[in-house]
Image 1 (cartoon, helix red, strand yellow):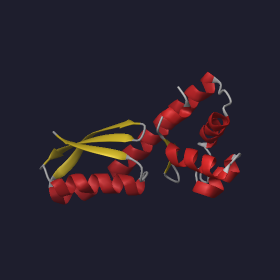
Image 2 (cartoon, rainbow, N blue to C red):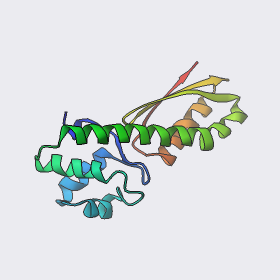
Image 3 (cartoon, rainbow, N blue to C red):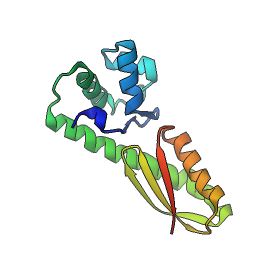
Image 4 (cartoon, one colour):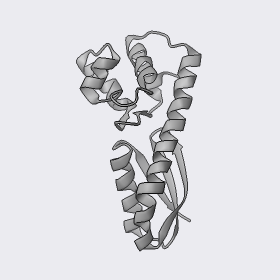
Length: 149
C-alpha cells in the first residue's frame, strides 16, 4: 500500500495531514523535510513525523520504502494521533459539553476519520461543538462523525 493511499495526520504538533504534504511536494517540487516544513509547517515541532515525511518524499519520487519503516511510521502515527485526539477530547472538549448535559463515551480514530460517541442529552449543538473543536485543536482535515448512544 502506498503511503498516499493511507490518509493520515502526519504532523500532530502542527496539525498537518498527508494530503497537504503530498500536494505541497508535488506542487513545489520539494525534496527535503526542511522544504516541507517551510511550505506547510509539517515537521516544525517535535520531529517525530520526520520519518513519515521522508516516506512521503520517497513515495512521490517513486522510490521503494522499507516495509518495516512504513509499518513503524504507521504505528507511531496511529498512536500519536489517537493520543492527540483523546487528549483534546478529555481536556479541551469534554468540559465544554457539561452545559449541554452531554459527555463523550468513546472515541475511535482511523487515519483522518474520528468517530465520537456522545452520551447524556442528545443536543445537535454539542455534536457540532465536538466536530468544530477537534478540527481546531487537532487537524482541520479530520472527518468527524458523531454518534448518540
